Amino acid sequence: MIVQLIFILQLLTSPAPQMVHPLHLSVTNIDYNSKQKEVNFAFKFFTDDFQMILNKKYSANINSFAQSNSKQIIPFVNRFLTDNFICTLNGSEMKTSKFDFVRMEQNFEASWFYYKVKVKDPLARLKINVSFFNQIFKDQSNMVFVAINNKQWAYKLNYHKTFFEISDIK
Image (cartoon, rainbow, N blue to C red; front, side):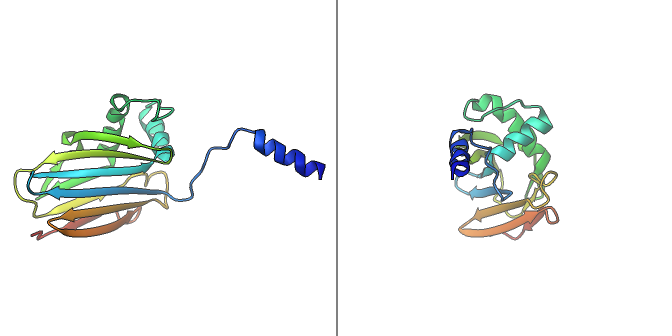
């Protein structure tokens, strides 16, 4: 009984261990706005995984997104996107460096990054290649949701399947 009480007291007074989530998942939303002639992107990552890869691969030295402002973080986010996200619109590859950063939202578990890009012609074809975290987590899933002209698509990409294409969009 005393041993159990001591164990419980140690648990209650010890610093909490770092939370480890069992799921390796990213979410990308792609919305085409034909009236404004732009494509909007929203990228969602688990904050702990994302901080880890920015620090490890890009020497970002970010301890907490909450303590950092977007001006410090976004250059590293842009590099990560350039390395892991390829968007081809109407047969032309759009460099993520040409995307306009809109905003960042962050909570304890997830971080959202919003971007947009202007397009000249109506969207007729879309090809997306995503490899977020594939080099670290072999069980990584990258969900991509697309909304174009009142039609919706959803794709689950992973280490073995990294791209999809939508053609003849009307």
